[in-house]
Image (cartoon, rainbow, N blue to C red; front, side):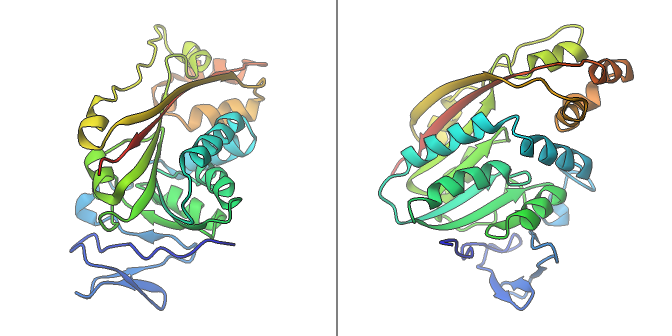
Length: 284
């Protein structure tokens, strides 16, 4: 397979290059980061953690993995792969970062499409959740999976051709730093009606999502070169899928026990998937 190991990782403590040494990564100043037996690397310093176990919990990661693998969001993953392949033309090698990779589901769909053109791919999946990075590393051995924050991405400047931020938390200054001139950011945000049926079961008053403005991205990164709304209706969800969907979203912690029970009993529930897909190109 035309996947290669990442060579652009830097030490999160002193920003010097990291080199593989047996089962660890080490910088010139002696900082050492072990590669876990599952394959991921923790590059999130303790002082940069906002909590003891930041990001999605193990239960949330597992729920999302099972839900996505059931195919409920397959039309979105397929469209993202198609859009990405069309946007990337004429490059025989691509350095790709998924900034908020989760278990790697979307990243795998996208890179599988890119791989069909026989490109050489160097792929990094980043997530602040150690459970997400571990799941990504365990499932997709071809990726370099790291625990880190978008606020301080441990990659060299001008090292990436493509950054993905899919339903994540964009930090445009960092994306600008790691992207090469002309590199692309593909960003996906929930549209106004995303999961509205689920939200109606939970909240007395449902507020429609507003897609974030593209102004900040254009100021800090570069022009918006593509935008598309994608909407589709899922197939009816079974009881397991309804539980998984709720657990993988922030709505789980806001839902009352009554609302959770009501959702579990909502046989035949189908949900709207509403996503805004945008591509920004880094200015030279």
